[in-house]
Structures are given as structure tokens and as C-alpha cells.
Image 1: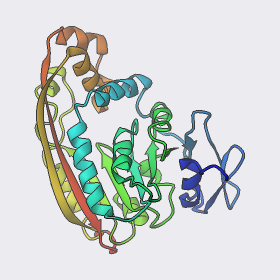
Image 2 (image 1 turned 180 degrees about the vertical axis):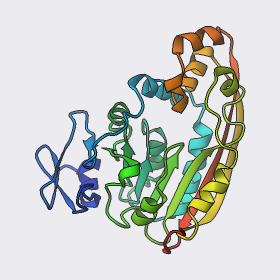
Image 3 (image 1 turned 90 degrees about the horizontal axis):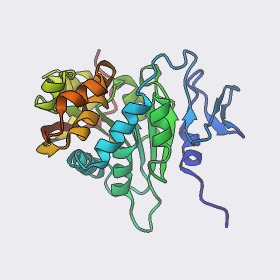
Length: 295
């Protein structure tokens, strides 16, 4: 009996070339499109599928990725993963082997949890595809779950996936490209977006000088998706916990604020005490209508 194909091997037929849009096939070093554009697979397992402009931004650093790994491993964001899983299972129903795309997947924590929730005994396993701009994050993403494939791709330049190739698309605190989301999702498929609520990460956010999220993110999101998507439910996560100072420092530097913060100064300011932190997240589900986006 031949071995089961890897997650990346299963994903290749769903890929499209970021340069010309042609389909892809496997090669000895990675993948090649029908027009001859080739893309390399790293020895760590991720596939780089960047277009002609290449990587314009470096993405998260190795230190940010390690910080995020520790924070997510602590269980602090488990309620967010649970809410995403509920929305995902509701979105795909009992369909076997759904294709799940996580855009800006980071370490693959949320994608792995989603795949665990969609795995059923005796059924074809789900296929997860995670995209990331950061090479450091992609290395971690490639080993996040046995059914997950890791791609280095730029959301703003378009998703390297065929039209209507995805059953469930999730975005957790990551950049969005509504036109591309509408392209890769067929009518009836589900988009799930996690957004920071107004009180997210307070009072640590204010004390550490972290960036403050816009207060109307959910309203703006619905407007961005109008026409192509219709709201299909919302789950609010609002939990306050006390965490060690070392984890508070990780939490501060792991996100967009990390490039502006000095870890040593932050650690000195936080001291050795535990710190309260509020995880306030809005998990919004949308159903693809089949209509174009409203301009």
C-alpha cells in the first residue's frame, strides 16, 4: 500500500501560480506551474509561493513567533480557539474532508485546533492550508498539524489558490483581502474572522504602550464584505485572567506592537508581579452569497 499523501501534496492541486494564475504540479524541489514558473519547498516543510514582487515586508521576527508560541501554549487564547471551532463546525456541517484556509496563520495554533474539531473517525481527514508572510512563522506552521500545509504568501498580492477551492476560511487578527476571499470561497461557504474587541488586552495594552484597535472593526468588516458575504452569526469572547510578568511581556511583543517595544525595558517595567489581562475578541461568521463585492 502506498503511503498517504502529505498535507502539502494534497494541497498542490488546489494551488495556482501567483505570477500567471496557472495550475500547479509537484516537482523535485517544490512545485511548478503549467507555464513553467517554479517555487521551492524549504527543508523545514513550507512552500514559498510569492509573486514577482517577492517579500515586500519581513513579517514577524523569530522572537515574536517564539513569544506567540509561549502565549498560545499557555491556554490564554483557548476560548478564542473554541469560538472559532464552533463557528467552523457550524459552517461546514457534516461534509467530509473540508478544505480549511487560515490566512495569516502565524504558528498554526488556530488552524490546528480547527482541524482537530473537524476530524471525524473513519472519514476523509480535513485539509488545512495556512498562509504566512513571515518565514519564521512558516517554519513553525509547517509542523503545526499533520493535516496542515504551510505556504509563504502575501495576502495583499493575492492568495495562491484556485477559484472556489476552499470550504472554510478563517482570519485571526490578520490582514484581510475581501476580493480574494470571495474568489476562493464558493457560494454557501463560510468565512470566520476574529477581531479584537474594544477592551482587548487591557489594562496591559495601556500600561505597555501597545497599539490600540479601532472601536468599529466589526462594523467596518461587515461593510467591507457587503454583497459577497452575509452575516451568519457572532460569538463574543470576554475573559479576564492573571498572567505572570514574563508571559505579559510575550503578549506585548508578539503582535504588531512588538516592532515598537523593547523587551528589556518592558520586562523591567512589568517587574515580577502577575498582571490582569482581558481577552476580548469578536468572532464573526459570514456566508458567501455568490454575488460580487459592493464597490
